[in-house]
Amino acid sequence: MVKTAMTVISLLVACMVAVSPIAEAITCGQVISGLAPCFGYLTKGGAVPPACCSSVRGLNNAAQSTPDRQTTCGCLKGVYASNSGINLSYASSLPGKCGVNIPYKISPTTDCSKVH
Ligand SMILES: *[C@@H]1O[C@H](CO)[C@@H](O)[C@H](O)[C@H]1NC(C)=O
Image (cartoon, rainbow, N blue to C red; front, top):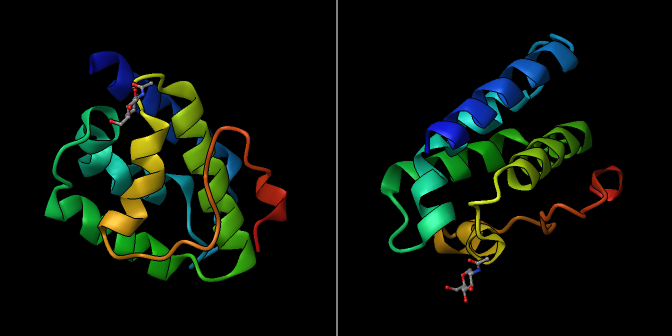
C-alpha cells in the first residue's frame, strides 16, 4: 500500500509536469486523486465505495472532449501499468458498477491516441 501510494504520488508529479496548465483541461492529477478512494476496490474487489463512484462520475463528466479523454486514458493506463496490485478485471468493471458508461476500455495496452 505504501508502495502504491508512492507510485501514485510520483505519477502525479510526473503528470503535473507533463500536462500543460491549460485552464479547464483535465489533468492527470485530477484523475489520480479522484481514483484514490477506488484503490481498495481496484486491488481487492468487494464493494465499490460511494466516494469512488462519485469520483468516477465526476471524472467522466469532466472528460468530454477528445483531448480530455486521451489525458484520462493515458493517466489510467499509467496507473494500471505501474501498480501490479490492480486487478484489471476489477478496473474494467468499475465504471459499470458506478453506472457510468465509459466509451473505451482502459488497459495497459490501450492506444490512447485512438480514444475520441
Ligand atoms: C482478478 O479478479 C478476478 C475476479 O475476482 C479473479 O478471477 C482473477 O484471478 C484476479 N486476477 C488477479 C491477477 O488477481
